Length: 252
Image (cartoon, rainbow, N blue to C red; front, side, top):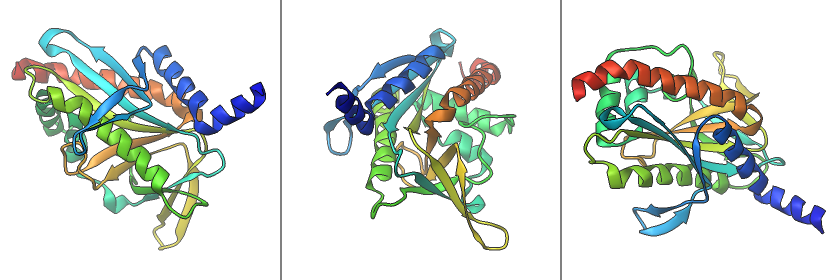
């Protein structure tokens, strides 16, 4: 019976959620399990798997980064992203179009004007070939992928909206979906040939204004590389905060 319960729980994704939370905690994030958020459109309370936050600085120069995380176990049915270089945003737009409070939006706008180039990163460094949609292989519909991205995005906006106009409150929320199985990228090469290859992460620039911006940027990560990639997220966040100190001095 114990084995059957473990197998059932694994199929539901609960162990994946716990493992993801453990990795974030080990990297210094504060994690909340299964918090509820208010869907602003339907005024219905919904559940998100994890909320992970880290705070840098203090007082009116504090900057909070939060991940709104959905975890999906897709071991038998990989996810496939649809990617194109032509789907890229202007580099400044990729930085500024984030789910953020009003003062954090001003910080992002000021930062975007500087044309600072990150050597590595996933939040502010746009991939060469971002995804515009994602589906699950070997099923007749893409409801699970859509629902995961939608939930992460809606939860992100619900965290921001109550504090959007709070004075000197700087928070940026990143929608993130972590999958337990494989992820593939599909695209057309320079000769117009259709290509499919396995990847470990992708960035979806979704033409769905769920976070108060024209586009919603969602990070998709495979669990087997998450620990390594979290180090990159941390370095990118610290570098952004470091580079923002001069902007803080002018805004406040």
